[in-house]
Length: 266
Image 1 (cartoon, rainbow, N blue to C red):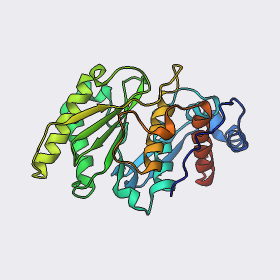
Image 2: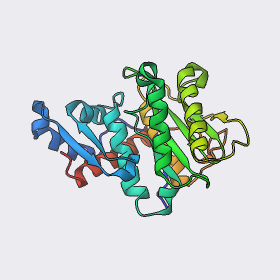
Image 3: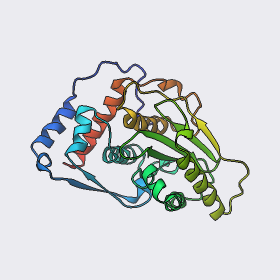
C-alpha cells in the first residue's frame, strides 16, 4: 500500500524542513551555483522512451523558494513517483507518464500532426491497453505558462481534465483536438472498435489560491491518483483530498529533496 497523505496535515508552512536545508547546503557548496548543470538519465520505464533531463540552479531555486515549477522539476518528481511508488509493482501496468517536453501548446501550434504521432507512439509502447489504465499528460499552456493535467483511459475512451484554475478544455481547443485524434488513431492502428465517442470529464479538483502553484497541484493530482490506485477519477474528485494546504505541497518538495540526495544528483 502506498503512503497516503493525511487529511489532517497542518496548514502551517514557510519553515524549511531539515531535508530541504540539507539539500540547499549541498547546492550552495556545488558548482551548480556557478552555472554548472546536471544531466540526469531516466530509464524507459518512466516515459516509455529513454529520457534525459537537465537540472540547473534555477530548478533547485524553484524547490527551495516555492516558485513556479519548470519542466525539469515536473519530470524529476515524475521520476520519483515511478521509481519510489511504482517500479516493480502492478501499478506500472495501471499508470503511465507522458513527457511534457514533447507535447505542449508550443509544439502543437508548430506541428500538430507530429505531436499527435508522438502520443500514438507513447500509447503503443505499453501492452494492448484493453484493460483500464491511465496515461498522465502534464500539459503546459506554452512559454512557461499554466500547468494542468490530462489523464487518459484508452480502454474506455475517457479523458479526465484536472485544472487548478477555473474553466475547462475549451481554453485549449488545439490540445483537445490533438488528444482526440491520437486516441482514435491509436485505436485504429490496434483495430479496436470505437464503440462510443470520446468522453471528456472536467474534474472538480482542488483549486490554487495564487498564481504560482499550478505545477505543484498537477504533481499532487498524479500522486494522489496513484496512491489511491484509482483509474476512475470521480467528477467531484476524491473525498480524501477536497483541498490542498501548503503543507500538502511541502510534503512533495521534501520527497523530491530526499530523492535528489539519495540519487546523488547534485
